[in-house]
Image 1 (cartoon, helix red, strand yellow):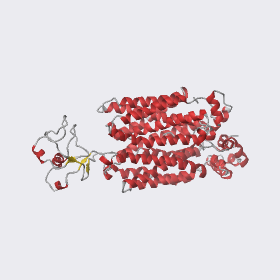
Image 2 (cartoon, helix red, strand yellow):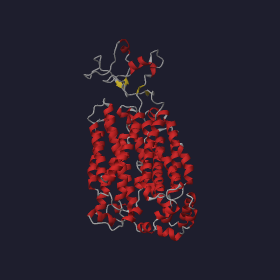
Image 3 (cartoon, one colour):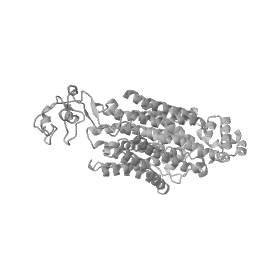
Image 4 (spheres, helix red, strand yellow):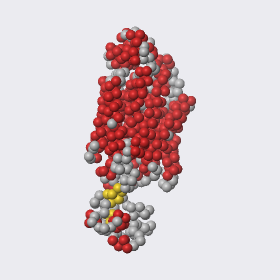
Length: 562
Protein backbone atom coordinates (compact mmCIF):
# COMPACT_ATOMS: atom_id res chain seq x y z
CA UNK A 1 0.00 0.00 0.00
CA UNK A 2 1.26 3.47 -0.91
CA UNK A 3 0.23 6.67 0.83
CA UNK A 4 -2.05 7.43 -2.11
CA UNK A 5 -4.02 4.26 -1.33
CA UNK A 6 -4.27 5.35 2.30
CA UNK A 7 -5.60 8.69 1.16
CA UNK A 8 -8.20 6.93 -0.99
CA UNK A 9 -9.30 5.01 2.10
CA UNK A 10 -10.19 8.18 4.02
CA UNK A 11 -11.63 9.89 0.93
CA UNK A 12 -9.21 11.55 -1.48
CA UNK A 13 -11.71 13.81 -3.26
CA UNK A 14 -14.39 14.28 -0.64
CA UNK A 15 -15.86 17.27 1.15
CA UNK A 16 -12.64 17.86 3.06
CA UNK A 17 -10.50 18.20 -0.07
CA UNK A 18 -13.01 20.48 -1.78
CA UNK A 19 -13.22 22.84 1.22
CA UNK A 20 -9.49 22.53 1.89
CA UNK A 21 -8.45 23.51 -1.65
CA UNK A 22 -11.08 26.26 -1.88
CA UNK A 23 -9.95 27.97 1.32
CA UNK A 24 -6.29 27.64 0.40
CA UNK A 25 -6.88 29.18 -3.03
CA UNK A 26 -8.57 32.28 -1.63
CA UNK A 27 -5.31 34.03 -0.56
CA UNK A 28 -3.79 33.15 -3.95
CA UNK A 29 -6.27 35.59 -5.52
CA UNK A 30 -4.55 38.45 -3.70
CA UNK A 31 -0.97 37.24 -4.12
CA UNK A 32 -0.97 38.72 -7.63
CA UNK A 33 -2.20 41.99 -6.15
CA UNK A 34 0.93 42.37 -4.04
CA UNK A 35 3.25 41.22 -6.81
CA UNK A 36 1.89 43.82 -9.24
CA UNK A 37 0.79 46.48 -6.74
CA UNK A 38 3.70 48.73 -7.77
CA UNK A 39 2.00 49.45 -11.10
CA UNK A 40 -0.65 51.46 -9.29
CA UNK A 41 0.79 52.69 -5.99
CA UNK A 42 3.93 53.90 -7.79
CA UNK A 43 2.32 55.25 -10.95
CA UNK A 44 4.08 58.43 -12.08
CA UNK A 45 1.59 61.30 -12.58
CA UNK A 46 2.34 64.21 -14.95
CA UNK A 47 4.40 66.76 -13.03
CA UNK A 48 6.31 70.02 -13.37
CA UNK A 49 8.19 72.45 -11.15
CA UNK A 50 6.35 74.65 -8.70
CA UNK A 51 6.39 78.36 -9.38
CA UNK A 52 8.82 80.66 -7.59
CA UNK A 53 7.73 81.50 -4.05
CA UNK A 54 7.57 85.23 -4.84
CA UNK A 55 4.76 84.52 -7.31
CA UNK A 56 2.44 83.03 -4.70
CA UNK A 57 0.77 86.38 -4.05
CA UNK A 58 0.49 87.36 -7.70
CA UNK A 59 -2.83 87.74 -9.50
CA UNK A 60 -1.78 85.52 -12.39
CA UNK A 61 -3.92 82.63 -13.53
CA UNK A 62 -2.41 79.11 -13.25
CA UNK A 63 -1.87 79.04 -17.03
CA UNK A 64 0.00 82.34 -16.98
CA UNK A 65 2.11 81.22 -14.04
CA UNK A 66 3.15 78.08 -15.90
CA UNK A 67 3.94 80.09 -19.02
CA UNK A 68 6.49 82.32 -17.29
CA UNK A 69 8.04 79.68 -14.97
CA UNK A 70 8.18 76.31 -16.75
CA UNK A 71 9.75 75.87 -20.22
CA UNK A 72 8.42 73.47 -22.83
CA UNK A 73 10.26 70.70 -24.63
CA UNK A 74 10.43 70.22 -28.40
CA UNK A 75 7.03 68.51 -28.38
CA UNK A 76 5.35 71.44 -26.63
CA UNK A 77 5.04 69.61 -23.28
CA UNK A 78 6.02 71.12 -19.96
CA UNK A 79 9.48 70.08 -18.79
CA UNK A 80 9.31 67.88 -15.72
CA UNK A 81 12.51 68.73 -13.90
CA UNK A 82 13.48 72.28 -14.84
CA UNK A 83 12.14 75.83 -14.59
CA UNK A 84 13.36 79.28 -15.47
CA UNK A 85 15.81 80.83 -13.01
CA UNK A 86 13.70 83.97 -13.07
CA UNK A 87 10.10 84.40 -14.27
CA UNK A 88 9.94 85.29 -17.97
CA UNK A 89 7.48 88.16 -17.71
CA UNK A 90 7.92 89.16 -21.32
CA UNK A 91 6.20 85.94 -22.41
CA UNK A 92 2.88 87.33 -21.16
CA UNK A 93 2.96 89.88 -23.95
CA UNK A 94 3.94 87.40 -26.64
CA UNK A 95 2.03 84.57 -28.26
CA UNK A 96 4.52 81.81 -27.54
CA UNK A 97 6.95 80.39 -25.05
CA UNK A 98 10.69 80.17 -24.63
CA UNK A 99 10.81 76.46 -25.19
CA UNK A 100 13.58 74.96 -27.30
CA UNK A 101 13.12 75.08 -31.06
CA UNK A 102 14.27 72.54 -33.61
CA UNK A 103 17.64 74.22 -34.01
CA UNK A 104 18.34 73.91 -30.30
CA UNK A 105 18.00 77.68 -29.62
CA UNK A 106 15.13 79.25 -27.78
CA UNK A 107 12.24 80.52 -29.82
CA UNK A 108 13.23 84.07 -28.97
CA UNK A 109 16.74 83.35 -30.18
CA UNK A 110 18.10 83.95 -26.67
CA UNK A 111 19.61 81.53 -24.18
CA UNK A 112 17.49 81.24 -21.06
CA UNK A 113 18.99 80.06 -17.78
CA UNK A 114 17.23 77.08 -16.21
CA UNK A 115 17.39 75.47 -12.77
CA UNK A 116 16.02 72.46 -10.95
CA UNK A 117 12.73 72.37 -9.07
CA UNK A 118 13.93 74.11 -5.92
CA UNK A 119 10.41 74.71 -4.62
CA UNK A 120 9.09 71.22 -5.28
CA UNK A 121 6.68 69.90 -7.87
CA UNK A 122 3.04 70.11 -8.84
CA UNK A 123 1.25 66.94 -9.95
CA UNK A 124 -1.69 66.37 -12.24
CA UNK A 125 -3.73 63.94 -10.15
CA UNK A 126 -6.60 63.52 -12.61
CA UNK A 127 -6.27 59.73 -12.74
CA UNK A 128 -5.25 59.10 -9.12
CA UNK A 129 -5.70 60.92 -5.86
CA UNK A 130 -2.22 60.00 -4.58
CA UNK A 131 0.74 57.69 -5.21
CA UNK A 132 4.04 57.18 -3.43
CA UNK A 133 5.59 59.24 -6.24
CA UNK A 134 3.51 62.32 -5.47
CA UNK A 135 3.65 61.87 -1.68
CA UNK A 136 7.44 61.55 -1.45
CA UNK A 137 8.43 63.33 -4.67
CA UNK A 138 10.22 60.35 -6.22
CA UNK A 139 10.82 62.18 -9.50
CA UNK A 140 13.74 63.68 -11.39
CA UNK A 141 16.92 62.96 -9.39
CA UNK A 142 14.99 60.52 -7.16
CA UNK A 143 13.13 58.69 -9.94
CA UNK A 144 15.34 55.58 -9.59
CA UNK A 145 13.87 54.97 -6.13
CA UNK A 146 10.65 53.80 -7.77
CA UNK A 147 12.44 50.80 -9.26
CA UNK A 148 14.40 50.36 -6.05
CA UNK A 149 11.13 49.87 -4.15
CA UNK A 150 10.14 46.94 -6.38
CA UNK A 151 13.64 45.47 -6.15
CA UNK A 152 13.45 45.56 -2.34
CA UNK A 153 10.09 43.79 -2.47
CA UNK A 154 11.49 41.06 -4.73
CA UNK A 155 14.45 40.79 -2.38
CA UNK A 156 11.96 39.99 0.37
CA UNK A 157 10.44 37.30 -1.85
CA UNK A 158 13.91 35.78 -2.31
CA UNK A 159 14.76 35.84 1.39
CA UNK A 160 11.31 34.49 2.26
CA UNK A 161 11.78 31.53 -0.07
CA UNK A 162 15.00 30.60 1.71
CA UNK A 163 13.71 31.21 5.24
CA UNK A 164 10.20 29.79 5.00
CA UNK A 165 11.27 26.90 2.79
CA UNK A 166 13.69 25.63 5.41
CA UNK A 167 11.40 26.34 8.35
CA UNK A 168 8.42 24.55 6.78
CA UNK A 169 10.46 21.35 6.43
CA UNK A 170 11.42 21.59 10.09
CA UNK A 171 8.28 22.91 11.79
CA UNK A 172 5.50 21.99 9.36
CA UNK A 173 3.44 23.63 6.66
CA UNK A 174 0.44 24.70 8.73
CA UNK A 175 2.15 26.81 11.39
CA UNK A 176 4.30 28.56 8.78
CA UNK A 177 1.16 29.28 6.73
CA UNK A 178 -0.44 30.86 9.81
CA UNK A 179 2.66 33.01 10.39
CA UNK A 180 2.86 34.00 6.71
CA UNK A 181 -0.77 35.16 6.64
CA UNK A 182 -0.24 37.25 9.75
CA UNK A 183 3.02 38.69 8.42
CA UNK A 184 1.35 39.67 5.13
CA UNK A 185 -1.58 41.30 6.92
CA UNK A 186 0.57 43.25 9.38
CA UNK A 187 3.25 44.25 6.86
CA UNK A 188 0.65 45.35 4.32
CA UNK A 189 -1.13 47.45 6.95
CA UNK A 190 2.15 49.05 7.98
CA UNK A 191 2.95 49.84 4.34
CA UNK A 192 -0.33 51.75 4.08
CA UNK A 193 0.54 53.86 7.13
CA UNK A 194 4.21 54.43 6.27
CA UNK A 195 5.27 58.06 6.59
CA UNK A 196 8.55 57.72 4.66
CA UNK A 197 9.88 55.84 1.67
CA UNK A 198 12.37 54.01 3.90
CA UNK A 199 9.61 52.56 6.07
CA UNK A 200 7.64 51.76 2.93
CA UNK A 201 10.53 49.65 1.62
CA UNK A 202 11.05 47.92 4.98
CA UNK A 203 7.44 46.78 5.20
CA UNK A 204 7.26 45.90 1.50
CA UNK A 205 10.24 43.64 2.15
CA UNK A 206 8.12 41.96 4.84
CA UNK A 207 5.27 41.56 2.34
CA UNK A 208 7.68 39.89 -0.07
CA UNK A 209 8.82 37.43 2.59
CA UNK A 210 5.22 36.67 3.51
CA UNK A 211 4.30 36.06 -0.13
CA UNK A 212 6.97 33.36 -0.41
CA UNK A 213 5.78 31.73 2.79
CA UNK A 214 2.20 31.78 1.56
CA UNK A 215 3.10 30.31 -1.82
CA UNK A 216 5.34 27.51 -0.59
CA UNK A 217 3.14 26.35 2.27
CA UNK A 218 -0.22 26.84 0.54
CA UNK A 219 0.72 24.68 -2.38
CA UNK A 220 2.49 22.10 -0.19
CA UNK A 221 -0.70 21.63 1.82
CA UNK A 222 -2.75 21.39 -1.36
CA UNK A 223 -0.60 18.79 -3.08
CA UNK A 224 -0.07 16.64 0.02
CA UNK A 225 -3.79 16.17 0.69
CA UNK A 226 -4.98 15.26 -2.81
CA UNK A 227 -4.41 12.14 -4.97
CA UNK A 228 -2.13 12.06 -7.99
CA UNK A 229 -4.96 11.68 -10.50
CA UNK A 230 -6.46 15.11 -9.71
CA UNK A 231 -3.26 17.07 -9.15
CA UNK A 232 -3.17 18.36 -12.69
CA UNK A 233 -6.73 19.65 -12.44
CA UNK A 234 -6.18 21.19 -9.03
CA UNK A 235 -2.89 22.65 -10.21
CA UNK A 236 -4.67 24.29 -13.13
CA UNK A 237 -7.33 25.71 -10.81
CA UNK A 238 -4.67 27.10 -8.50
CA UNK A 239 -2.77 28.64 -11.40
CA UNK A 240 -5.91 30.29 -12.70
CA UNK A 241 -6.58 31.67 -9.22
CA UNK A 242 -3.43 33.76 -9.63
CA UNK A 243 -4.59 34.82 -13.10
CA UNK A 244 -7.99 35.91 -11.77
CA UNK A 245 -6.12 37.78 -9.06
CA UNK A 246 -4.51 39.97 -11.72
CA UNK A 247 -7.97 40.91 -12.99
CA UNK A 248 -9.21 41.56 -9.45
CA UNK A 249 -6.30 43.95 -8.87
CA UNK A 250 -7.28 46.01 -11.91
CA UNK A 251 -10.88 46.29 -10.66
CA UNK A 252 -9.88 47.23 -7.10
CA UNK A 253 -7.31 49.77 -8.32
CA UNK A 254 -9.86 51.31 -10.70
CA UNK A 255 -12.25 52.11 -7.85
CA UNK A 256 -9.63 52.93 -5.19
CA UNK A 257 -7.31 55.64 -6.53
CA UNK A 258 -5.49 56.42 -3.27
CA UNK A 259 -2.40 54.25 -2.83
CA UNK A 260 -2.79 53.88 0.94
CA UNK A 261 -6.41 52.69 0.75
CA UNK A 262 -5.51 50.42 -2.17
CA UNK A 263 -2.72 48.81 -0.16
CA UNK A 264 -5.10 48.31 2.75
CA UNK A 265 -7.73 46.80 0.45
CA UNK A 266 -5.38 44.04 -0.72
CA UNK A 267 -3.86 43.47 2.74
CA UNK A 268 -6.79 43.40 5.19
CA UNK A 269 -8.26 40.14 3.74
CA UNK A 270 -5.16 38.34 4.99
CA UNK A 271 -6.37 38.87 8.57
CA UNK A 272 -9.35 36.70 7.60
CA UNK A 273 -7.00 34.17 5.98
CA UNK A 274 -4.96 34.17 9.20
CA UNK A 275 -8.03 33.14 11.20
CA UNK A 276 -9.08 30.53 8.65
CA UNK A 277 -5.59 29.01 8.49
CA UNK A 278 -5.91 27.70 12.05
CA UNK A 279 -8.52 25.24 10.73
CA UNK A 280 -6.16 23.57 8.24
CA UNK A 281 -4.81 20.12 8.99
CA UNK A 282 -1.08 19.54 8.96
CA UNK A 283 0.18 17.32 6.15
CA UNK A 284 0.15 13.67 7.27
CA UNK A 285 3.01 13.00 4.87
CA UNK A 286 5.16 15.57 6.64
CA UNK A 287 4.12 14.29 10.08
CA UNK A 288 5.24 10.75 9.23
CA UNK A 289 8.51 11.97 7.70
CA UNK A 290 9.06 14.04 10.88
CA UNK A 291 8.51 10.98 13.10
CA UNK A 292 5.08 12.07 14.35
CA UNK A 293 2.90 9.13 13.26
CA UNK A 294 0.37 9.50 16.07
CA UNK A 295 -0.58 13.01 14.99
CA UNK A 296 -0.67 11.86 11.37
CA UNK A 297 -3.18 9.14 12.27
CA UNK A 298 -5.35 11.66 14.14
CA UNK A 299 -5.43 13.95 11.11
CA UNK A 300 -6.28 11.08 8.76
CA UNK A 301 -9.12 10.00 11.02
CA UNK A 302 -10.47 13.55 11.16
CA UNK A 303 -10.42 13.70 7.38
CA UNK A 304 -12.21 10.34 7.21
CA UNK A 305 -14.90 11.59 9.57
CA UNK A 306 -15.30 14.83 7.60
CA UNK A 307 -15.70 12.81 4.40
CA UNK A 308 -18.22 10.44 6.01
CA UNK A 309 -15.82 7.45 6.15
CA UNK A 310 -15.59 6.91 9.88
CA UNK A 311 -15.24 3.12 9.71
CA UNK A 312 -12.41 3.24 7.16
CA UNK A 313 -10.62 5.84 9.26
CA UNK A 314 -10.72 3.67 12.37
CA UNK A 315 -8.83 0.91 10.53
CA UNK A 316 -5.71 3.05 10.15
CA UNK A 317 -2.89 2.28 12.58
CA UNK A 318 0.81 3.07 12.86
CA UNK A 319 1.92 -0.11 11.09
CA UNK A 320 -0.29 0.62 8.08
CA UNK A 321 0.90 4.22 8.01
CA UNK A 322 4.60 3.32 8.09
CA UNK A 323 4.16 0.74 5.35
CA UNK A 324 2.50 3.33 3.13
CA UNK A 325 5.44 5.71 3.55
CA UNK A 326 8.24 3.15 3.16
CA UNK A 327 9.24 4.34 -0.29
CA UNK A 328 9.25 8.02 0.63
CA UNK A 329 11.20 7.41 3.84
CA UNK A 330 13.82 5.36 2.04
CA UNK A 331 14.29 8.17 -0.48
CA UNK A 332 14.74 10.70 2.32
CA UNK A 333 17.59 8.81 3.95
CA UNK A 334 21.05 10.20 3.43
CA UNK A 335 22.39 13.71 3.35
CA UNK A 336 22.00 15.80 0.20
CA UNK A 337 22.74 19.44 -0.49
CA UNK A 338 22.69 21.97 -3.30
CA UNK A 339 26.15 20.76 -4.32
CA UNK A 340 24.56 17.51 -5.54
CA UNK A 341 22.85 19.56 -8.25
CA UNK A 342 26.28 20.07 -9.86
CA UNK A 343 28.29 16.93 -9.00
CA UNK A 344 27.44 14.75 -12.01
CA UNK A 345 27.42 15.69 -15.73
CA UNK A 346 23.70 15.30 -16.47
CA UNK A 347 22.63 16.96 -13.21
CA UNK A 348 25.02 19.83 -13.93
CA UNK A 349 23.62 20.35 -17.43
CA UNK A 350 20.05 20.24 -16.14
CA UNK A 351 20.72 22.71 -13.32
CA UNK A 352 22.61 25.23 -15.46
CA UNK A 353 20.01 25.10 -18.25
CA UNK A 354 17.07 25.39 -15.85
CA UNK A 355 18.77 28.27 -14.03
CA UNK A 356 18.91 30.18 -17.31
CA UNK A 357 15.28 29.31 -18.11
CA UNK A 358 13.92 30.41 -14.73
CA UNK A 359 16.04 33.55 -14.53
CA UNK A 360 15.14 34.83 -17.98
CA UNK A 361 11.45 33.91 -17.70
CA UNK A 362 11.03 35.84 -14.45
CA UNK A 363 13.35 38.62 -15.61
CA UNK A 364 11.45 39.32 -18.83
CA UNK A 365 8.02 38.66 -17.26
CA UNK A 366 8.41 41.33 -14.60
CA UNK A 367 10.22 43.61 -17.02
CA UNK A 368 7.02 43.71 -19.08
CA UNK A 369 4.42 43.47 -16.30
CA UNK A 370 5.92 46.14 -14.03
CA UNK A 371 6.09 49.07 -16.46
CA UNK A 372 2.57 49.45 -17.85
CA UNK A 373 2.73 53.22 -18.29
CA UNK A 374 5.29 52.99 -21.11
CA UNK A 375 2.67 51.61 -23.53
CA UNK A 376 0.68 54.83 -23.55
CA UNK A 377 -2.57 52.96 -22.81
CA UNK A 378 -4.84 53.22 -19.78
CA UNK A 379 -3.04 51.20 -17.09
CA UNK A 380 -6.28 49.68 -15.76
CA UNK A 381 -7.22 48.38 -19.19
CA UNK A 382 -3.80 46.98 -19.95
CA UNK A 383 -3.66 45.29 -16.53
CA UNK A 384 -6.88 43.46 -17.44
CA UNK A 385 -5.49 42.50 -20.85
CA UNK A 386 -2.17 41.35 -19.37
CA UNK A 387 -4.02 39.22 -16.83
CA UNK A 388 -6.54 37.78 -19.31
CA UNK A 389 -3.87 36.67 -21.80
CA UNK A 390 -2.62 34.13 -19.24
CA UNK A 391 -5.80 32.09 -19.68
CA UNK A 392 -5.35 31.04 -23.34
CA UNK A 393 -1.56 30.93 -22.89
CA UNK A 394 -1.81 28.32 -20.14
CA UNK A 395 -4.35 26.27 -22.07
CA UNK A 396 -2.19 26.30 -25.20
CA UNK A 397 1.03 25.32 -23.41
CA UNK A 398 -0.75 22.54 -21.49
CA UNK A 399 -1.93 21.00 -24.77
CA UNK A 400 1.50 21.54 -26.31
CA UNK A 401 3.31 19.86 -23.40
CA UNK A 402 0.96 16.87 -23.58
CA UNK A 403 1.27 16.26 -27.33
CA UNK A 404 4.49 17.88 -28.56
CA UNK A 405 6.61 17.55 -25.44
CA UNK A 406 8.06 19.59 -22.60
CA UNK A 407 11.33 20.62 -24.26
CA UNK A 408 9.94 22.05 -27.54
CA UNK A 409 7.16 23.80 -25.58
CA UNK A 410 9.68 25.41 -23.23
CA UNK A 411 12.06 26.44 -26.02
CA UNK A 412 9.27 27.73 -28.25
CA UNK A 413 7.62 29.83 -25.52
CA UNK A 414 10.90 31.51 -24.58
CA UNK A 415 12.15 32.19 -28.09
CA UNK A 416 8.77 33.52 -29.27
CA UNK A 417 8.58 35.79 -26.21
CA UNK A 418 12.04 37.18 -26.93
CA UNK A 419 11.32 37.74 -30.61
CA UNK A 420 8.09 39.68 -29.91
CA UNK A 421 9.89 41.91 -27.40
CA UNK A 422 12.66 42.64 -29.89
CA UNK A 423 10.17 43.37 -32.69
CA UNK A 424 8.51 45.88 -30.38
CA UNK A 425 11.72 47.91 -30.41
CA UNK A 426 11.18 48.61 -34.11
CA UNK A 427 7.61 49.89 -33.67
CA UNK A 428 7.30 53.70 -33.39
CA UNK A 429 6.28 54.93 -29.96
CA UNK A 430 3.10 56.55 -31.28
CA UNK A 431 1.81 53.17 -32.52
CA UNK A 432 0.50 52.32 -29.06
CA UNK A 433 -1.99 49.68 -30.26
CA UNK A 434 0.65 47.71 -32.13
CA UNK A 435 3.12 48.01 -29.25
CA UNK A 436 0.51 46.83 -26.77
CA UNK A 437 -0.49 43.82 -28.89
CA UNK A 438 3.12 42.70 -29.21
CA UNK A 439 3.69 43.19 -25.49
CA UNK A 440 0.57 41.15 -24.66
CA UNK A 441 1.75 38.33 -26.95
CA UNK A 442 5.17 38.38 -25.29
CA UNK A 443 3.68 38.39 -21.82
CA UNK A 444 1.43 35.45 -22.73
CA UNK A 445 4.44 33.48 -23.97
CA UNK A 446 6.28 34.19 -20.72
CA UNK A 447 3.25 33.08 -18.69
CA UNK A 448 3.24 29.86 -20.75
CA UNK A 449 6.96 29.47 -20.05
CA UNK A 450 6.29 29.80 -16.31
CA UNK A 451 3.66 27.06 -16.47
CA UNK A 452 5.98 24.81 -18.45
CA UNK A 453 9.13 25.27 -16.38
CA UNK A 454 7.39 24.48 -13.07
CA UNK A 455 6.19 21.10 -14.34
CA UNK A 456 9.32 20.41 -16.39
CA UNK A 457 11.69 21.12 -13.47
CA UNK A 458 9.72 18.83 -11.14
CA UNK A 459 10.04 16.02 -13.67
CA UNK A 460 13.76 16.53 -14.30
CA UNK A 461 14.99 16.51 -10.70
CA UNK A 462 15.07 13.20 -8.76
CA UNK A 463 12.95 12.69 -5.65
CA UNK A 464 15.87 12.75 -3.20
CA UNK A 465 16.91 16.30 -4.16
CA UNK A 466 13.77 17.60 -5.86
CA UNK A 467 13.11 20.18 -3.16
CA UNK A 468 16.72 21.36 -3.33
CA UNK A 469 16.46 21.62 -7.11
CA UNK A 470 13.15 23.47 -7.03
CA UNK A 471 14.53 25.76 -4.34
CA UNK A 472 17.58 26.56 -6.46
CA UNK A 473 15.70 27.40 -9.66
CA UNK A 474 13.08 29.36 -7.71
CA UNK A 475 15.91 31.40 -6.24
CA UNK A 476 17.17 32.12 -9.76
CA UNK A 477 13.67 33.33 -10.67
CA UNK A 478 13.68 35.66 -7.65
CA UNK A 479 17.06 37.05 -8.70
CA UNK A 480 15.66 37.70 -12.19
CA UNK A 481 12.66 39.51 -10.69
CA UNK A 482 14.99 41.65 -8.54
CA UNK A 483 17.21 42.65 -11.46
CA UNK A 484 14.34 43.41 -13.87
CA UNK A 485 13.29 46.79 -12.37
CA UNK A 486 16.87 48.03 -12.29
CA UNK A 487 17.35 47.34 -16.01
CA UNK A 488 14.61 49.89 -16.72
CA UNK A 489 16.95 52.57 -15.41
CA UNK A 490 19.28 52.05 -18.38
CA UNK A 491 16.50 53.43 -20.57
CA UNK A 492 17.27 56.90 -19.19
CA UNK A 493 20.52 56.83 -21.16
CA UNK A 494 19.83 54.41 -24.04
CA UNK A 495 16.05 54.15 -24.64
CA UNK A 496 16.20 50.88 -26.59
CA UNK A 497 18.58 49.04 -24.25
CA UNK A 498 16.00 47.62 -21.75
CA UNK A 499 13.96 46.11 -24.59
CA UNK A 500 17.08 44.58 -26.10
CA UNK A 501 18.03 42.98 -22.78
CA UNK A 502 14.48 41.81 -22.00
CA UNK A 503 14.18 40.29 -25.48
CA UNK A 504 17.66 38.81 -25.71
CA UNK A 505 17.58 36.95 -22.39
CA UNK A 506 14.60 34.65 -23.26
CA UNK A 507 16.08 33.81 -26.66
CA UNK A 508 19.41 32.78 -25.12
CA UNK A 509 17.71 30.69 -22.43
CA UNK A 510 15.44 29.13 -25.06
CA UNK A 511 18.58 27.90 -26.81
CA UNK A 512 19.95 26.63 -23.48
CA UNK A 513 16.73 24.63 -22.92
CA UNK A 514 17.57 22.53 -25.99
CA UNK A 515 20.14 20.71 -23.85
CA UNK A 516 17.47 19.49 -21.41
CA UNK A 517 16.22 15.88 -21.78
CA UNK A 518 12.60 15.27 -22.79
CA UNK A 519 10.37 13.94 -19.98
CA UNK A 520 7.05 13.40 -21.76
CA UNK A 521 5.84 9.90 -20.90
CA UNK A 522 8.89 9.17 -18.72
CA UNK A 523 8.64 8.02 -15.10
CA UNK A 524 9.85 10.39 -12.41
CA UNK A 525 13.44 9.68 -11.29
CA UNK A 526 14.01 8.75 -7.63
CA UNK A 527 17.79 8.98 -7.46
CA UNK A 528 20.65 10.83 -9.11
CA UNK A 529 21.61 7.54 -10.77
CA UNK A 530 18.21 7.46 -12.47
CA UNK A 531 18.88 10.92 -13.90
CA UNK A 532 22.34 9.94 -15.12
CA UNK A 533 20.96 6.76 -16.69
CA UNK A 534 18.36 8.79 -18.57
CA UNK A 535 20.97 11.30 -19.65
CA UNK A 536 23.26 8.59 -21.00
CA UNK A 537 20.44 6.83 -22.83
CA UNK A 538 20.17 3.86 -20.47
CA UNK A 539 16.69 2.83 -19.37
CA UNK A 540 15.63 3.69 -15.88
CA UNK A 541 15.31 0.89 -13.39
CA UNK A 542 12.38 2.56 -11.68
CA UNK A 543 8.95 0.91 -12.07
CA UNK A 544 6.55 3.35 -13.77
CA UNK A 545 3.77 2.60 -11.29
CA UNK A 546 5.92 3.55 -8.32
CA UNK A 547 7.00 6.68 -10.13
CA UNK A 548 3.42 7.75 -10.71
CA UNK A 549 2.61 7.20 -7.05
CA UNK A 550 5.59 9.26 -6.01
CA UNK A 551 4.97 12.02 -8.54
CA UNK A 552 5.72 15.27 -6.84
CA UNK A 553 3.73 17.90 -8.68
CA UNK A 554 4.18 20.68 -6.23
CA UNK A 555 6.06 22.47 -8.96
CA UNK A 556 3.01 22.26 -11.21
CA UNK A 557 0.86 23.81 -8.50
CA UNK A 558 2.86 26.91 -7.69
CA UNK A 559 2.37 28.46 -11.10
CA UNK A 560 3.10 32.18 -11.19
CA UNK A 561 3.88 32.40 -7.49
CA UNK A 562 7.47 33.14 -8.29
